[in-house]
Amino acid sequence: MTVTASPAGGARLTTLSRSVAGSVALVTGAASGMGRATAHLLADEGVRVGVVDLDEARVGDVVAEITDVHGPDAALGVVADLGGVGACGDAVEQVTAWGGRLDILVNNAGISLVDGARVDEEDFEASWERTMAVNLTSQARLVRHALPHLEAAPAGRVVNIASTEAIVATASLAAYAASKAGVTGLTRSLAVEIGRDGLTVNCICPGPIETAMTERFPGEAKATYARRRVPMRRYGSAEEVAQMTLNLCLPASSYVNGAVIPVDGGMTVRHT
Image 1 (cartoon, rainbow, N blue to C red):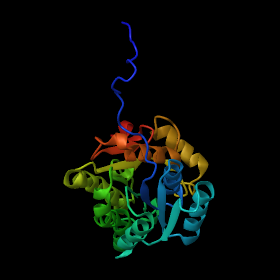
Image 2: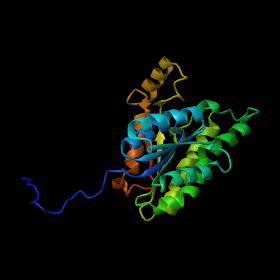
Image 3: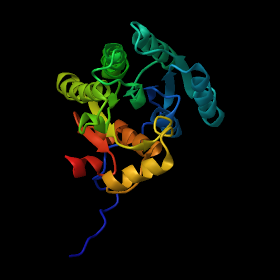
Image 4: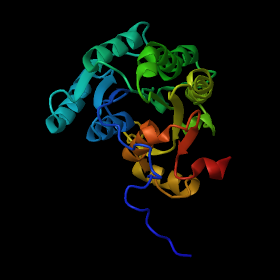
């Protein structure tokens, strides 16, 4: 078979854009780990980024890192405890007032795995309430407040970060696993409810990732875990999760809606 080039001036088969330049994004949990990697990657692609996190010093660091490279208007820092009532609306208001619009919402903020409690421990209910407030309720609140702006955007995108704990279970992490399973359910429901006129809602379930959350575990323990459970026999990087987030934010990903995507080196395929 002979393949020939299209004649000059002929119709292009590739019409969907892979550029997010000029967009405005709000990224939560953006002071470290996957959120920081996502904020940097979006900024590298020409997106103005609202860097939202609880840690004021680290928020300032990430904003400085981005603006040093991309200019003073490339990032805005917002310090917020998203588990508190009113914080989500305030964060959206600050970012949209600064950016004039909102195209991308990345719900990445979450409480560390080791902040959980066993179901029979005295402080389980307090841990449950705090975990749900930060990991799940904040995502719903942020979508509610951001929705008018996202619907007005040419290609509004919501990317919710869950975890493979939503798919496979680990002992003593009931609150964390339940919150992350809730994120996948929230994503699917919102995709049906508001996935119209170009707005998409998708979810990423990271597996074992090298972040501040996991660096507290001994290296040999992590290596053993990866060899036993991950077909690729390693932990992933924060940037690998950020790259998938970027892919879901592209205008070219316009028909991906309601997806729940593991980024885990094949771990959940092997253990489900």
